[in-house]
View 1 (cartoon, rainbow, N blue to C red):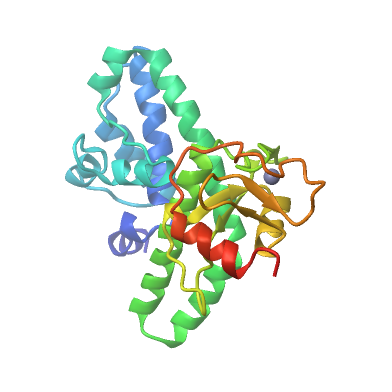
View 2 (tube, helix red, strand yellow):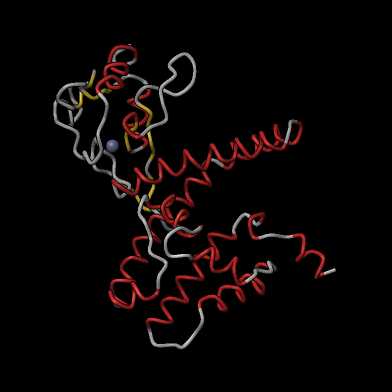
Amino acid sequence: MQEQSLERFSWREHPDAVELGFSHYLNLIERRLQGEDISLVQGLRQFYQTELGVSLRETQARGLMHRDSSVFIDYVNQVTGERFTPNVEYWETLGLDAFLSWTKRFNSAQNIAAIDLEEEQGDITGSRRIGREGPAVRRTTVVRQIYRDNALSRFLKYLYDSHCQVCGFSFPLPRGGIYVECHHIRPLGNPHQGPDIENNMLVLCPNHHAMMDYGVIAVHPENRAVLSIDPSLAQQGQPLQLQKHVLKVEFLEYHYTHHFGR
Ligand SMILES: [Zn+2]
């Protein structure tokens, strides 16, 4: 019975296999950097077997952690927008401190990612319900779509360290992570058909997100100043407090024309 389920069950089908495996992998690297004589391949295989009940071949384990192109590299890239080097020799050169400081940054980006998934839980469930009636491929596409969107908003939240671009505000959550939202300047969907790309997005606190949606505030398409129908707004006429990515003029013009003050 046990063997049958192992045979049937690939790591690719386990929803948390990459996240949990990578977290354990970081742990193994840390132990190696602290001088422990352990094998990363064996350690990873053992982890998958005992913790997730997934039987991993040696080549599969090596594939997960290959230095040039691997599942782990793609995973890190999706969470942080950064490239990770899963090569213990590389980290041995930089030293334990550098590794731990990288790990700390990764974990903070990971917390942001976890909040995103919780937020969209409703959407995922909904998509699965549709998927059960339609072809399986549709479900995969919908789930992938959500992952891609998450990756982009996660990247932007990471870029701004979860601070609002208008006012710089952010707040921590009791279970870890910092809360902030992503806004599409030209809205997605009908009738606006705005694109899901970073040049069409702003990182905002919930207040400024709602004010943007209701057309109370806008960003000036030319000088990036905050415009408001409420003259008492503290940021009125001031440039965006945080600007670390490029906003496209045409999207700002669209919002200004179709939403601001309407
Ligand atoms: Zn704000």
